[in-house]
Image 1 (cartoon, rainbow, N blue to C red):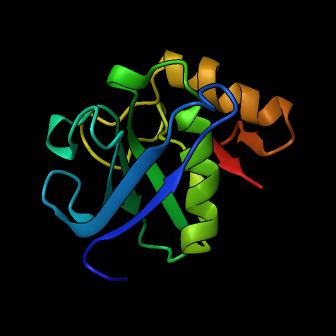
Image 2: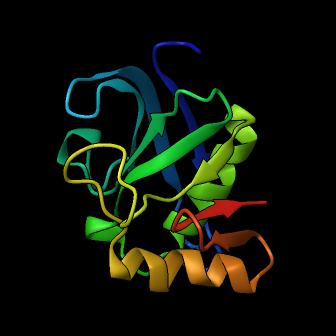
Image 3: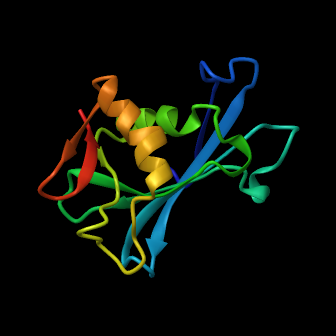
Length: 142
């Protein structure tokens, strides 16, 4: 994967706005693994340094999964970016995208926030794009 990669998109909920995403991969000492860091922003409205939307994927040791360990809409709550970028991540990396787990965290401080469950993962399940694994307490994309 190149050091930095970017793309542009809009969502159904914010079709009049064009968003840019930038991502790169680096080691995260907190979770002791490589992570893919995304910044999502509108060019000319705010800059990437302001972190108006943060999204981080942890590269899991099994070689199959990328785990969502940060999903923070900040300035763009309600625009549908979370669902878009999770689905897009599967396309970009060809890996299974999973949520964090409250019962089986992979590092200290990991959790799947109630807002993420209710506003992102449950709608993905209802749309037929994800499933909840009761045994391991995480959601994953189909």
